[in-house]
Image 1 (cartoon, one colour):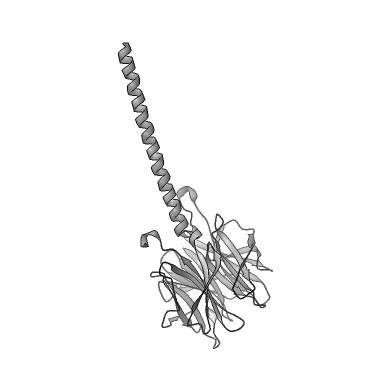
Image 2: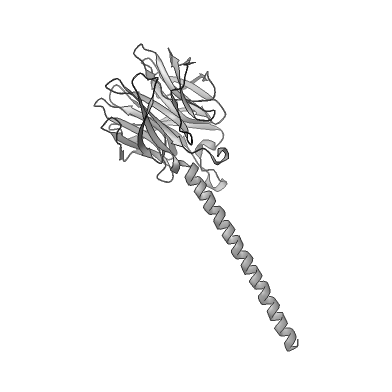
Length: 315
């Protein structure tokens, strides 16, 4: 090879290397932008953007926003009123990863909440979607969806896994430190359970990932049997409250758009009729779900619910 050809060859190689380096840099920049965009979307629409707020009512039908943020970065809350007026609030804690069950308490009627170190000992599952019952003998009985994840196959949400899902329970003496006891119900696609003591039996309501909600019953709350599909479709169910006349009222959110909370009435907790009107509407730029109500010592009602951003596909 002559000197001139050698110089030309080196020049061509350097040019090719420069082009490849530039292309690699552009690809890395695009991937970085896509990653940032995806991360931003997850922060906007994931649990990190979910918040638990409250509303108040004197009659259980007409509601007013409290404009009080009870818990930030949290979802699927369930309140429990204690004898001394303390409000315990259990929820999916999205401030830690992986998300798990957390709890807070309020000693001022829901004006402020203090986060507690809620734990479940003896568990090996991904536990979310809590519901709680305080038994007559003072035992806190926490029920929850005990799921699994499969990160290697891109499954981070246990509710999205197909097949039978399990509801487990744990017990506690103080409502903070729980010990897992076992399984109470297994059914196809279970998620987000609510357990309710009617005074005669325990009733479990649960959504599923197969497009319906189901009802199960139990005499002792330790083993549930499927009873029926829930009679009204497209509702996000909740734990009912007992009214003065002995009937039950449930505050369910409308799954069509997730923009409003409705109410249902029942005499037995099994057959339900929707009441007229809307109990609470979401702000214009938010969705409202996971509505749960308790009646306070003074007779007033307090509703806790989740406000979140609509999915990107709706914006």
